[in-house]
Image (cartoon, rainbow, N blue to C red; front, side, top):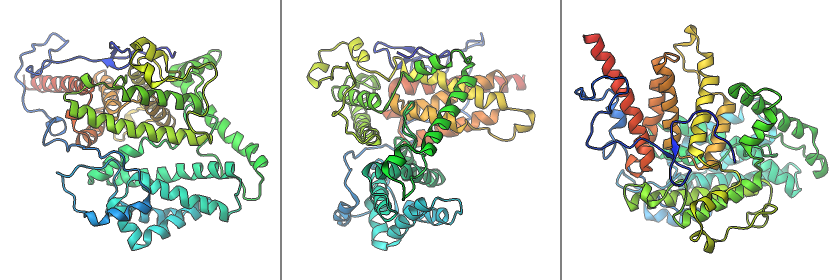
Length: 499
């Protein structure tokens, strides 16, 4: 198992996975300070209350309509059902809108004119652009389609383009389509990010898109950004291409270099450290763990969430349905990366976990059924965020850079995203971790307040997209505790100025 890296603020609870966080009495409006200041100070209206007023006005409920995995061809059948939607209508996870489709078409048009774009990628973009320009196609996808549908569309059209460019070997086609898909996912992410602040559907689609990894699983030998094989090369030449090997090796070196610097691991120990962090993960072990996650989830025994972790059983059902859909998508995506379907190949020496045996297993036995997901996964994730912020942001802040926000490096973002997907770390917990870490450095004077506002902005987005009443209760209280500490310090500073 992966050892705990760094200091995490949470401690494992009874199932040894989700951190046990401070639980506050709902009748207490002020958290008691640790600095010895009086705890009965009268609170004024929160300076960030518009962000963190949980409930009816702060967020719109997500009533997930799970199971809408139909292809684009079947969308037109539901067109007669009407396309009027309002805030009382349940939002379909990843649902698109005509405005989003229009923005995607415009982005495709802009991307195809880039001189540095690979000819095959350009051909794929043009094919999708021409398809979506047809009024009937664009309207159907915009009114009834989802992120799944547009990615399926891109995959199908990309396979056609591969044939036109002389790529006929099935392995080469799969690898090429995977490479093009990663680029298209990045394009979609850019479009959705630009519209998320004005469109609820765009924000929900962006969250759903986060579960489509645009890079390989940590430790994987497959590079999603590998160069496209030459149309004239044979499958043998493509498989052994020095360019592919070089790119994969370069990506691994960059990640290794970042980890060594961020965690101050000496050269003599970095191999052991990486093996410990990655736990020799590959596509097969990742799929097996995701299948186990799905299995225990269906039995209401998931470490990521159980019925008693939510305010109501209905909130748990909404979360569970959404989690099942995401796990099924991930299993399919990761399985296709190495052209095998999960269940057909099982790790050597591993006994397949049967559904009938899950209920009879204890929590420790269930925990041992995972090969890649570590115990205390949430605490591990928080520790990684702490180190990433320290290395990428705090160490690079200078007096001359106080007016700009330094983001996490692409390597850190990619690593954290991969681990969050594999370890089932929810979006609310991820953003709260970032706020908590940023607040810690702000308290010590290492970061200006602009970083705190930026972190609050990330929380605001999540709060308005996922009703906190539907959050895991421990994650809700973690955010409430963090927010209360920030508010109390801010109010104390104001009183000190007045006095």
